[in-house]
Length: 196
Image (tube, rainbow, N blue to C red):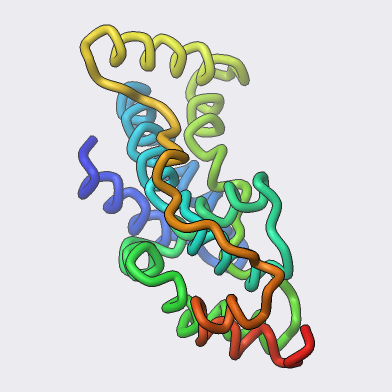
């Protein structure tokens, strides 16, 4: 599965999602229709996409939107960026402040809740699809370990490429002036009080 095919899977699941069938559930349904080898390949592309936005500026956006953001929550935020589809993911990757135009982010800012974008369940879609196919909740992890070992043996690296070596410039998320300088549009939505 290449990245175009990966995004096709995401967009198909987005199209199938409804209020009663959230995106992550639609994604599991979509993945469960694929061969197990394709589910593993999907997970590799997912980890690449999630790792590519492991950056301080994206984390700062998550911090504003979520009213704070731990390492675990940032994993959920990055999964949620993927769940928004290729257009929003690529916009956020290029300029995290562009999320200030996302309808769910605008709504969350006005409703004063930090649920926009964060999507924990999307992290586990491949494992859930694998379990549905095999009836074994450990089968995915065993298959993933074998898949990673095989890829490494052939000089390829499968896994969560966090990009920890190139996260960009670290800065203080609790410094309102710095946040306003780096993320002016999101700060205008979330830092209404100048003394925040």
